[in-house]
Structures are given as C-alpha cells and as structure tokens.
Picture 1 (cartoon, rainbow, N blue to C red):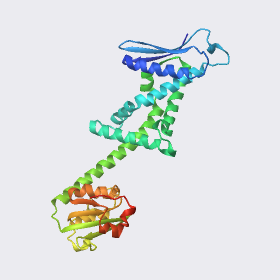
Picture 2 (picture 1 turned 30 degrees about the vertical axis):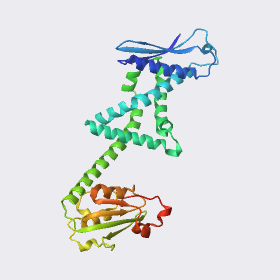
Picture 3 (picture 1 turned 180 degrees about the vertical axis):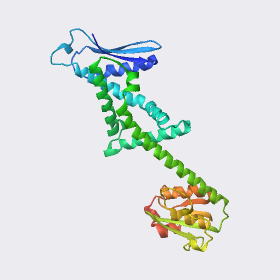
Length: 315
C-alpha cells in the first residue's frame, strides 16, 4: 500500500537512487518491529518518483501505531537532504537574484564567507560539527514542519515545487547568512584596495632611513626604533603621508603603519613572538620584501624576554 509519493523533475537516476536509499534507511530506524515499510523509486529522463510503501497487514495497521511517524520521518529526511545537498544552490540563487552579484569570482568569494559563517556557528558551545550547529538544526526544523504539513494535506509532493515556492521562512534564514557574507566580502575588498594603495605609496617613495626595528612587546604594545636603536620621531620627517588623508574604514593600528610609511625605511625588522598578529601581517603585506621577522636576537632578548622559554622564530 502506497503511503506517500515524492516527485522529482529532470534528475539523474543516481540522484534518485541515493535519495531513495536515504529515505529507506531512515524508515528502518523507526524501531517498529517488522513494520513492512520500504522506499522504492521509478525513473525516466524527465520525471522520477520515490514511493513510501507498507505491506498489507503490517504493524502500521495496529491502532497504537500512527501514520504520523512515517510522515515525520519522511519530512525530516527530505529536510536534511535539502540543507545538505540543495542549500548551496539556493544560496547562490539568492546572491545572484536578490543581491545582483553575477561575476563568478565574486560569487565564489561570497559563498566562501557563507561557509565560514556556517563553520563558525558549529563552534558555538563547543559543538564540533556543522551538522550540530543551532542555525542548521533550526533550518532543518523549519523545513520539516513545512513538509509535514504539506504531506498531511496531500500524500503526493513535488520536491522541486516545494523548493521553488514554499521556502519563504527558510530563505529568510539564508538571506541573513548571505547578507553577513556580502558585508564581509565588501569589507575585505575595501581592505585590499586600501592595502594596494599603501603598497603603491611605499613603492613610489624613496627610502629615508636605512632600517627600522618594530618591536612587539606583547598585546598592542609596540616600539619603533631606527637603525641606531633609538626611538623614531615621525615629526622629524617630511610627513607627505598621513593616514587620515585617506578615506577608509579599516580597523588596525593606524599610527604604526602611518609612522612606518612616513619614515620610509629601506628595511623593517619586526621583532615579535606572535608573527601571525593581524597588524604584523598587514605591515608585511604593505612593505613586502622590505620586512624581516625576527624572534631570536639580542633585541628580542632585551625587549621580548628569555628565548629559551619561547618558541624560537627564524628570520
């Protein structure tokens, strides 16, 4: 006896076979002894069906076992399938149609930020897997409730029609993720444009001093010394560059970068125990091959502490 039928349009047989197997596996976990439930499929190039069937005289006809169990199981399986296998496509359609991004490189970058957002969610409260993230669970629950309601009204469902016309609330969840990703994408692009401008400014400037030592004492504490290991006073130089002259919205230690660009050293030695610090990576990006990172020299010992107790870093 057929309980439910799911219609699919223009799909490969391997896809239908895989989804049917997922449904079948879920049905077997209902813990109904000898329940007689099974999922089968038919396929042609333009249309396919997945059928959930039960053998006549099975335990499902027992008055204590309700058809709602099967409906809920099918709805959850389809909801999980949509989130796992269709969500990327739905997100891309949102980004292209709602936010008007069409350039492939932009789409790939924004989708990357979407994935980062989803991965970060999985770290909330120590949850290790994306499948356990609160947002993902919520989206699956939204879809499950929608699917259950439709299957209760009518046991035949077009999965393509459901995805196309019935996902308003679910798409709102994805739209928030897309908006966050686009904000991150725009900020990163502005940052890279600003860095490129600074790189150009450094390139066209002549060196004013032979070397500068940027000493990172920890946290946000820095010292800038010249080649004679004396503190640098940027006011002594012709300050043809000022950070405030540029329109920007970049959140890093402006004064350090401004000072280094103003004094324009031929070489910058960065003494640090934390070379992955954002400001240090930014300085290395701006000044490129002018920079050297050091974590093991007399200056490091003097300002940064005993190297024997630190991870030694080579230039």
